[in-house]
Amino acid sequence: TMLLAVSVAPVAAQGAPDTLTVTRVSDFPTCFHPICFQTGNQYMNFQLLYNSLVKVDTDVSTFIPDLADSWDVSPDATTFTFKLNPNAMWHDGTPVTADDVIYTAATAAQMAETYTTNGTYSIANWTAVLGADAVVGTTNVPEGLKKIDDHTVEFTLAAPNAVWLRNLPDPAYMI
Image 1 (cartoon, rainbow, N blue to C red):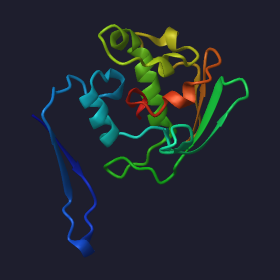
Image 2 (image 1 turned 60 degrees about the vertical axis):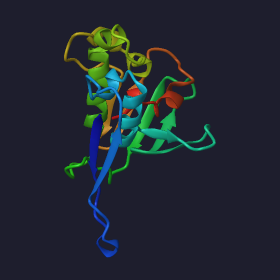
Image 3 (image 1 turned 90 degrees about the vertical axis):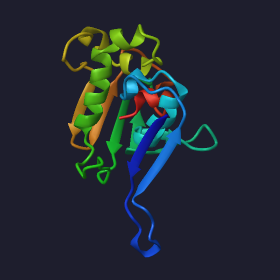
């Protein structure tokens, strides 16, 4: 049995508990990082634990903010610029920054060979970033990842990709 405990802020007026416990009989993931997502159970847990830059609304076609408040896409679908919500915080109260987004995408590119050969979900969005192929097996950052400021990050792809933004809500691309 996999047991997952997620802390939530208590609501004192209602006397709500400060822990939500989710139990599910399932496989236990061998890796708890979104880039090595393999199963439906991981999908469910990653959706509960992590955020993506954008989400897709219930109409399945409208993008809505998640970690990013806003975004711009170049007309040729090669450059995607995200303005992060300045109030987004990690569980310990540390702000989510452009460095966190770059770290996630760079780590995926660096480890792409490992995670594309062992049956994991495709991380094609991260490997589509300009220079991703050159950083496999290194600790380098692909040239297509750029920090504009603490809350703005730019992705430049190696080629136009009309579905790149649509793929971001998938668990493999959680930050």
